[in-house]
Amino acid sequence: MYVVFGATGQVGGATARALLAMGRKVRAVVRDPAKAEALGQQGAELVVADFNDASALEAALRGADGAFIMIPPNFAPGKDFPETRAVVGALRLAAQAAKPARIVCLSSVGAHRDKGLGLITQLRILERELSGLPMPLAFIRAAWFMENIAWDIAPAREAGELASFLSPLERKIPMVATADIGRLAAQTLHEQWTGKRILEIEGPSRYCPLDLARLLGEALGRPVRAKLVARGLWEDLFRSGGAADPSPRMEMLDGINSGWIDFEGAPAEAAKGDTPHETVIARLIASSERG
Image 1 (cartoon, helix red, strand yellow):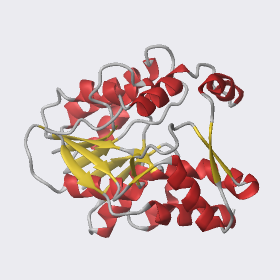
Image 2 (spheres, rainbow, N blue to C red; image 1 turned 135 degrees about the vertical axis):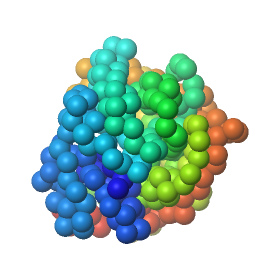
Image 3 (tube, rainbow, N blue to C red; image 1 turned 90 degrees about the horizontal axis):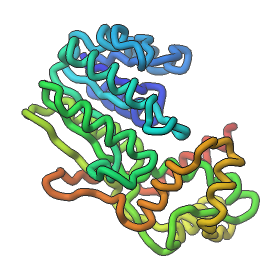
Protein backbone atom coordinates (compact mmCIF):
# COMPACT_ATOMS: atom_id res chain seq x y z
CA MET A 1 0.00 0.00 0.00
CA TYR A 2 1.29 3.44 -0.95
CA VAL A 3 0.46 6.67 0.86
CA VAL A 4 0.12 9.84 -1.21
CA PHE A 5 0.00 13.29 0.34
CA GLY A 6 -1.52 16.21 -1.55
CA ALA A 7 -3.68 13.83 -3.56
CA THR A 8 -6.17 16.55 -4.51
CA GLY A 9 -3.39 18.72 -5.98
CA GLN A 10 -1.64 18.53 -9.32
CA VAL A 11 1.46 16.50 -8.46
CA GLY A 12 -0.08 14.44 -5.66
CA GLY A 13 -3.06 13.67 -7.83
CA ALA A 14 -0.82 12.64 -10.73
CA THR A 15 1.15 10.37 -8.40
CA ALA A 16 -1.98 8.72 -7.02
CA ARG A 17 -3.42 8.16 -10.50
CA ALA A 18 -0.13 6.68 -11.75
CA LEU A 19 -0.01 4.25 -8.83
CA LEU A 20 -3.65 3.23 -9.34
CA ALA A 21 -2.95 2.69 -13.04
CA MET A 22 -0.17 0.30 -11.98
CA GLY A 23 -2.71 -1.66 -9.97
CA ARG A 24 -1.32 -0.54 -6.60
CA LYS A 25 -3.32 0.17 -3.48
CA VAL A 26 -3.33 3.86 -2.62
CA ARG A 27 -4.11 5.65 0.62
CA ALA A 28 -4.74 9.28 -0.28
CA VAL A 29 -4.16 11.78 2.51
CA VAL A 30 -6.49 14.75 2.06
CA ARG A 31 -7.90 17.66 4.01
CA ASP A 32 -11.21 17.74 2.14
CA PRO A 33 -12.47 14.29 1.06
CA ALA A 34 -15.11 15.87 -1.17
CA LYS A 35 -12.32 17.07 -3.47
CA ALA A 36 -10.94 13.52 -3.71
CA GLU A 37 -14.22 11.86 -4.71
CA ALA A 38 -12.86 10.84 -8.13
CA LEU A 39 -9.85 9.12 -6.54
CA GLY A 40 -12.16 7.28 -4.16
CA GLN A 41 -14.23 6.06 -7.09
CA GLN A 42 -11.03 4.73 -8.68
CA GLY A 43 -10.32 2.66 -5.57
CA ALA A 44 -8.14 4.89 -3.41
CA GLU A 45 -8.63 4.81 0.35
CA LEU A 46 -9.26 8.35 1.56
CA VAL A 47 -7.79 9.47 4.90
CA VAL A 48 -8.30 12.92 6.38
CA ALA A 49 -5.30 14.39 8.18
CA ASP A 50 -4.11 17.89 9.02
CA PHE A 51 -0.48 18.59 8.13
CA ASN A 52 0.18 19.97 11.60
CA ASP A 53 -1.18 16.89 13.38
CA ALA A 54 1.73 14.47 13.79
CA SER A 55 -0.50 11.76 15.28
CA ALA A 56 -2.91 11.84 12.33
CA LEU A 57 0.00 11.84 9.88
CA GLU A 58 1.55 8.87 11.68
CA ALA A 59 -1.70 6.92 11.41
CA ALA A 60 -1.87 7.70 7.70
CA LEU A 61 1.72 6.51 7.12
CA ARG A 62 1.60 3.35 9.21
CA GLY A 63 2.00 0.12 7.25
CA ALA A 64 3.01 1.84 4.01
CA ASP A 65 5.28 0.19 1.45
CA GLY A 66 6.14 3.70 0.38
CA ALA A 67 4.98 7.27 0.83
CA PHE A 68 4.90 10.29 -1.45
CA ILE A 69 5.28 13.37 0.73
CA MET A 70 4.80 16.98 -0.23
CA ILE A 71 4.08 20.10 1.78
CA PRO A 72 1.15 22.43 1.10
CA PRO A 73 2.11 25.40 -1.10
CA ASN A 74 2.41 28.65 0.82
CA PHE A 75 2.86 31.78 -1.28
CA ALA A 76 2.65 34.14 1.70
CA PRO A 77 4.92 32.65 4.38
CA GLY A 78 5.80 34.37 7.63
CA LYS A 79 9.32 35.56 8.37
CA ASP A 80 11.72 32.59 8.55
CA PHE A 81 8.94 30.25 7.32
CA PRO A 82 7.38 29.20 10.66
CA GLU A 83 4.45 27.48 8.92
CA THR A 84 6.74 25.28 6.86
CA ARG A 85 8.91 24.42 9.86
CA ALA A 86 5.82 23.31 11.81
CA VAL A 87 4.54 21.11 8.97
CA VAL A 88 7.94 19.55 8.30
CA GLY A 89 8.43 18.92 12.01
CA ALA A 90 5.11 17.08 12.18
CA LEU A 91 5.97 15.04 9.09
CA ARG A 92 9.36 14.09 10.53
CA LEU A 93 7.85 12.91 13.81
CA ALA A 94 5.16 10.96 11.97
CA ALA A 95 7.64 9.23 9.65
CA GLN A 96 9.98 8.36 12.53
CA ALA A 97 7.10 6.69 14.36
CA ALA A 98 5.31 5.02 11.41
CA LYS A 99 8.46 3.90 9.56
CA PRO A 100 7.17 3.60 5.96
CA ALA A 101 9.46 1.40 3.89
CA ARG A 102 10.62 4.30 1.71
CA ILE A 103 9.78 7.95 1.13
CA VAL A 104 9.71 10.06 -2.04
CA CYS A 105 9.41 13.83 -1.49
CA LEU A 106 8.50 16.61 -3.89
CA SER A 107 11.22 19.26 -3.83
CA SER A 108 12.28 21.95 -6.30
CA VAL A 109 14.98 22.96 -8.68
CA GLY A 110 17.52 24.99 -6.71
CA ALA A 111 16.86 23.35 -3.34
CA HIS A 112 20.56 22.52 -2.98
CA ARG A 113 21.26 26.23 -2.46
CA ASP A 114 21.36 27.54 1.10
CA LYS A 115 20.32 31.14 0.32
CA GLY A 116 18.72 33.31 -2.34
CA LEU A 117 15.79 30.95 -2.89
CA GLY A 118 12.75 32.91 -1.75
CA LEU A 119 9.71 30.63 -1.73
CA ILE A 120 11.87 27.62 -2.62
CA THR A 121 13.44 27.94 0.84
CA GLN A 122 10.45 25.89 2.00
CA LEU A 123 11.70 22.90 0.00
CA ARG A 124 15.25 23.47 1.23
CA ILE A 125 13.85 23.16 4.78
CA LEU A 126 11.99 19.98 3.80
CA GLU A 127 15.12 18.34 2.38
CA ARG A 128 17.33 19.33 5.30
CA GLU A 129 14.92 18.25 8.04
CA LEU A 130 13.85 14.93 6.50
CA SER A 131 17.33 13.87 5.37
CA GLY A 132 18.04 12.41 8.81
CA LEU A 133 15.24 9.85 8.59
CA PRO A 134 16.46 6.23 8.65
CA MET A 135 14.49 4.83 5.70
CA PRO A 136 15.48 5.22 2.01
CA LEU A 137 14.67 8.74 0.81
CA ALA A 138 14.33 10.30 -2.64
CA PHE A 139 13.85 14.01 -3.27
CA ILE A 140 12.40 14.95 -6.66
CA ARG A 141 13.63 18.42 -7.60
CA ALA A 142 11.14 19.53 -10.21
CA ALA A 143 11.61 22.30 -12.75
CA TRP A 144 9.15 25.18 -13.27
CA PHE A 145 5.67 23.69 -13.63
CA MET A 146 4.29 23.98 -17.16
CA GLU A 147 0.86 24.36 -15.56
CA ASN A 148 1.88 27.81 -14.27
CA ILE A 149 0.82 29.10 -17.68
CA ALA A 150 -2.83 28.64 -16.65
CA TRP A 151 -2.73 32.20 -15.26
CA ASP A 152 -1.78 33.54 -18.70
CA ILE A 153 -4.55 31.98 -20.77
CA ALA A 154 -7.27 34.56 -20.09
CA PRO A 155 -5.13 37.67 -20.80
CA ALA A 156 -3.66 35.98 -23.86
CA ARG A 157 -7.13 35.20 -25.18
CA GLU A 158 -8.56 38.64 -24.36
CA ALA A 159 -5.65 41.01 -24.98
CA GLY A 160 -3.12 39.00 -26.96
CA GLU A 161 -0.46 39.48 -24.27
CA LEU A 162 1.59 37.26 -21.98
CA ALA A 163 2.99 39.30 -19.09
CA SER A 164 6.26 37.68 -18.10
CA PHE A 165 8.20 37.91 -14.84
CA LEU A 166 10.80 35.60 -16.37
CA SER A 167 13.58 37.48 -18.14
CA PRO A 168 15.12 37.95 -20.57
CA LEU A 169 12.29 36.96 -22.84
CA GLU A 170 14.53 34.79 -25.00
CA ARG A 171 16.15 32.84 -22.13
CA LYS A 172 15.02 29.21 -22.02
CA ILE A 173 14.60 27.49 -18.66
CA PRO A 174 13.68 23.90 -17.69
CA MET A 175 9.96 23.26 -17.32
CA VAL A 176 8.02 20.08 -16.61
CA ALA A 177 4.43 18.83 -16.69
CA THR A 178 3.02 17.76 -13.33
CA ALA A 179 1.86 14.48 -14.88
CA ASP A 180 5.50 13.60 -15.60
CA ILE A 181 6.48 14.39 -12.01
CA GLY A 182 3.71 12.10 -10.75
CA ARG A 183 4.83 9.27 -13.01
CA LEU A 184 8.42 9.63 -11.81
CA ALA A 185 7.27 9.62 -8.18
CA ALA A 186 5.20 6.48 -8.71
CA GLN A 187 8.04 4.70 -10.50
CA THR A 188 10.55 5.66 -7.82
CA LEU A 189 8.30 4.32 -5.06
CA HIS A 190 8.62 0.88 -6.67
CA GLU A 191 12.41 0.93 -6.78
CA GLN A 192 14.85 -0.40 -4.20
CA TRP A 193 17.70 1.75 -2.92
CA THR A 194 19.51 2.71 0.26
CA GLY A 195 20.33 6.11 1.66
CA LYS A 196 19.29 9.33 -0.06
CA ARG A 197 18.69 10.05 -3.74
CA ILE A 198 18.18 13.32 -5.59
CA LEU A 199 16.26 13.21 -8.89
CA GLU A 200 16.07 16.35 -11.02
CA ILE A 201 13.27 16.33 -13.60
CA GLU A 202 12.49 18.56 -16.54
CA GLY A 203 10.42 18.14 -19.68
CA PRO A 204 11.58 17.14 -23.18
CA SER A 205 12.44 20.75 -24.15
CA ARG A 206 13.28 24.04 -22.47
CA TYR A 207 11.14 27.11 -23.06
CA CYS A 208 11.42 30.88 -22.87
CA PRO A 209 8.59 33.45 -22.58
CA LEU A 210 8.76 34.03 -26.34
CA ASP A 211 8.13 30.31 -26.89
CA LEU A 212 5.20 30.34 -24.47
CA ALA A 213 3.58 33.33 -26.23
CA ARG A 214 3.96 31.58 -29.59
CA LEU A 215 2.48 28.32 -28.29
CA LEU A 216 -0.44 30.15 -26.67
CA GLY A 217 -1.07 32.03 -29.89
CA GLU A 218 -1.10 28.83 -31.92
CA ALA A 219 -3.48 27.16 -29.49
CA LEU A 220 -5.82 30.15 -29.23
CA GLY A 221 -5.74 31.00 -32.93
CA ARG A 222 -4.61 34.60 -32.43
CA PRO A 223 -1.31 36.48 -32.12
CA VAL A 224 0.07 36.62 -28.57
CA ARG A 225 2.97 38.89 -27.60
CA ALA A 226 5.28 38.29 -24.66
CA LYS A 227 5.67 41.46 -22.59
CA LEU A 228 8.24 41.82 -19.83
CA VAL A 229 6.93 43.06 -16.47
CA ALA A 230 9.44 45.64 -15.25
CA ARG A 231 11.23 44.63 -12.04
CA GLY A 232 10.28 47.95 -10.43
CA LEU A 233 6.56 47.09 -10.74
CA TRP A 234 6.72 43.68 -9.05
CA GLU A 235 6.18 44.68 -5.45
CA ASP A 236 3.11 46.81 -6.10
CA LEU A 237 1.63 44.17 -8.40
CA PHE A 238 2.11 41.37 -5.90
CA ARG A 239 0.76 43.48 -3.05
CA SER A 240 -2.30 44.40 -5.10
CA GLY A 241 -2.79 40.66 -5.62
CA GLY A 242 -3.01 40.14 -1.86
CA ALA A 243 0.59 39.40 -0.83
CA ALA A 244 1.40 41.11 2.46
CA ASP A 245 5.10 40.42 1.93
CA PRO A 246 6.03 39.79 -1.72
CA SER A 247 9.78 39.59 -1.04
CA PRO A 248 10.00 35.74 -1.00
CA ARG A 249 8.32 35.50 -4.39
CA MET A 250 10.48 38.29 -5.78
CA GLU A 251 13.66 36.66 -4.47
CA MET A 252 12.67 33.38 -6.12
CA LEU A 253 12.08 35.07 -9.48
CA ASP A 254 15.35 36.99 -9.20
CA GLY A 255 17.14 33.70 -8.53
CA ILE A 256 15.60 32.05 -11.57
CA ASN A 257 16.31 35.01 -13.84
CA SER A 258 19.93 35.27 -12.70
CA GLY A 259 20.55 31.53 -13.14
CA TRP A 260 21.25 31.08 -9.42
CA ILE A 261 18.25 28.78 -9.12
CA ASP A 262 19.02 25.90 -11.45
CA PHE A 263 19.68 22.19 -11.30
CA GLU A 264 22.60 20.97 -9.23
CA GLY A 265 23.70 18.28 -11.66
CA ALA A 266 25.89 15.36 -10.52
CA PRO A 267 25.62 13.62 -8.13
CA ALA A 268 21.88 14.20 -8.65
CA GLU A 269 20.15 11.87 -11.13
CA ALA A 270 18.73 13.52 -14.24
CA ALA A 271 15.22 12.57 -15.35
CA LYS A 272 13.23 13.67 -18.40
CA GLY A 273 9.49 13.84 -18.79
CA ASP A 274 7.99 13.31 -22.22
CA THR A 275 5.04 15.75 -22.14
CA PRO A 276 5.54 18.78 -24.42
CA HIS A 277 4.22 22.18 -23.37
CA GLU A 278 1.76 22.14 -26.27
CA THR A 279 -0.07 19.23 -24.64
CA VAL A 280 -0.35 21.03 -21.31
CA ILE A 281 -1.55 24.25 -22.94
CA ALA A 282 -4.21 22.42 -24.96
CA ARG A 283 -5.51 20.68 -21.84
CA LEU A 284 -5.62 23.90 -19.83
CA ILE A 285 -7.42 25.78 -22.59
CA ALA A 286 -9.98 23.01 -22.94
CA SER A 287 -10.53 23.07 -19.18
CA SER A 288 -10.98 26.86 -19.15
CA GLU A 289 -13.53 26.64 -21.95
CA ARG A 290 -15.54 24.05 -20.01
CA GLY A 291 -15.65 26.52 -17.13
